[in-house]
Amino acid sequence: MKTAGIDGCKLGWILISFDKNEEKYQVIETEEDLKTAFALYDRIFIDMPIGLEDEEYTRECDALLRKELGGEYASSVFTPPIRPALDAPSYVEANMISFEWTEKKLSLQAWNITPKIKMLDRLLRENEELKEKVLESHPELLFQKLNDGMIFQKKNLKKGIRHRLGLIKEEEPIADDFFRDIKEEWRRSDVGEDDIVDAMVMAYYAKKSQTDGIRTIPTEVSYDSEGLPKAIHLV
Image (cartoon, rainbow, N blue to C red):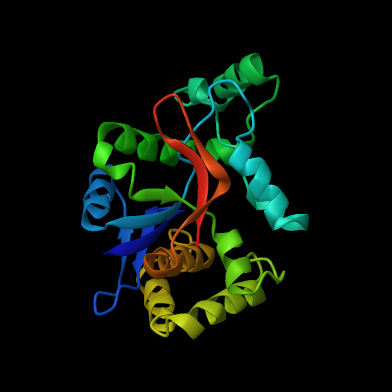
């Protein structure tokens, strides 16, 4: 089984794979290249909402994930747009649609990643074979698991990035080389240090899931109106 982790970045997407003898990193800029990358792997953990609500403001998986993360880390979970607002041409109109259906507005953080949510949603709806192998996950949850459930410095601090990279290096020594090389090849404004370590932890757990299996939040997975799972996947 070929596995990878993907996180969004300013330039597009960053993909990491820790598969033995096939370790690689790739920055993906177009939808067609993302589709090609999806086809190359059998299991991908991705940090992007997949299943969407039609009328409810908050997905159950997001509410449970915030509880699992606890404290200040709950703020790392953005509530994605409801499906009726997904194709809104502007933030103002998306807000109006969201408020009309849920009586709550869409956060600016969620709006900023909406183009990527739309791209991923389109690919999964148009390619049935991707629905079982492209799985939504969350890097902060995975890092907590990797650190035995302990809280550490946030990743917007240098020490937070160093700590996260150190945790991954203990499991995948090549991570240190990848981190350095990616920073040399792309500007930080295009690919952030947090994007790199987030893709890495998802790559590590996608690989680890082959032997340890997958569990979900919530345990009983529900599906949206397009048949996409509303669940966070972890090991």
